[in-house]
Amino acid sequence: MIENKSWRDMRAVDPGSEPEVTFFVPCLNEEAHVVPTLQTIERAAARAGCTYEIIVWDDHSTDATPRLVGEFAAAHPGMSLRLVRNERKRGLARNYVEGAFAGRGKWYKIVNGDNAETEEDLVAILSRKGEADIVLPYFHEDARVAGRRLLSVLFTAFVNALSGFHLRYYNGAVLHLRYNVMRWHSDTYGFAYQAEILTRLLGEGATYLEVPIRHVEAGGRVSKALTVENVLSVGHSLLQILLRRLRRFLFKV
Image (cartoon, rainbow, N blue to C red; front, side, top):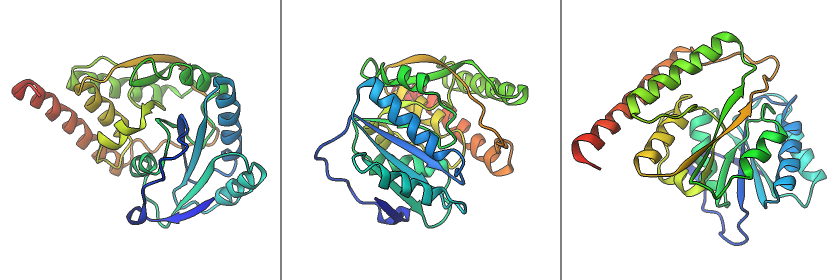
């Protein structure tokens, strides 16, 4: 099923026949990777033995991504697969939250449309669902270039220092209880949205476990982490994280 939606016309989804996991697959010009991503999810979910739905959220792609997803859905009529197409670009953080409201599963898992998560890693994460409120992957093998690894290490150190928590990684493809993403989502547009959600949940007493995975670098990717827009957004998120810690300390809430 293909839906053309703006954020204003999202509707509640019928609660009947709820799958265990909603896979949220964000895409922006992923024609070379989106079908392999869907195939990886299909195989991993089968191995993990979980029922699921997939929501491919296309952020106004200009390539063949929507057509390829539609063709894949037509070739797999028994799969619960929806394609939502933004009328204009909204950004990953906003789409991630909207996807949680659009989903039906108890659990919510982002799988980026660049097929950077391996089948083995997805199985490792899915097999731990139910053991904690949050299943949080971190890289024990990291194929990113040295500069990106350093940036990630520094970001993690900043978030831990500001929040008082001690996670290994804050930007991973986390497995959440879907309700928690709806209830405790961030209001940022930048890459730090997951750090905001995680620190809010941990502040509320959510439980978590960390699962080691390996990073597979998708070819041809250019990092947008150091754009002016994202740097400002990340700064806002870090300030929010610090203020929440101060609130917990001062008001014991």
